[in-house]
Length: 286
Image (cartoon, rainbow, N blue to C red; front, top):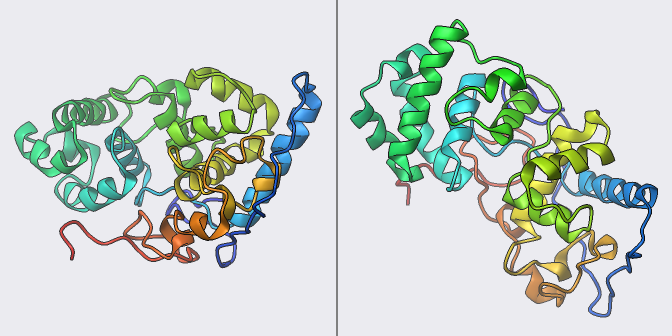
């Protein structure tokens, strides 16, 4: 389970596992009239396989407390977690608490978060949510979904990230990667994130929601890419009904792997101690 204090995973270190799918492998045929029970069994098997592939799956935003995770998640909209992680050290050094951030000069904050894009809108959200935390919640991040979504710039996705990783409250994080993969796996054809969340919540027990989110997002970032999935290097290829949408040649597919799977730095400057990849470089580092 992910630690609520540090965002670190609790499992022992393991090397990344990337199987090779034979060139002749065919996608499994999913019956058009697949029963709900059959879908549940298939989905849960994929989740078990992903747990073997990514035993170290974790939030990819650096944070030390719920407030930092909340701010980082708001900043992550329309940018990478890497860029957020490279930006937040200076931001949190200047404004370590909601009270500090609520009193910030907007222009100065805009300059600090400019690298994340949409910095004016994000500054407005951060000032608003910090003031709300100060005025309505005693300077503490609330641990309830209904309270979090009332904060400026905070929707269900952000709320579930904070609940699952800062408070240990199960939540499903439906970002672009999660939505793309669950549709590729034919778990649902819904496009609306709220509807996707409801469908997936019906397939998996609550105890799996947070880690399922991490595993699926990890897989989407590392192997099952949007434009060109690395099908030939995918360890769950035999279970994937969309096998063949991407590169099926094992050698060519291996070159598409990202982050620790491809031997490159991850997105966190301060990854968990059991993360097998390399820490990301600081902003401006060569």
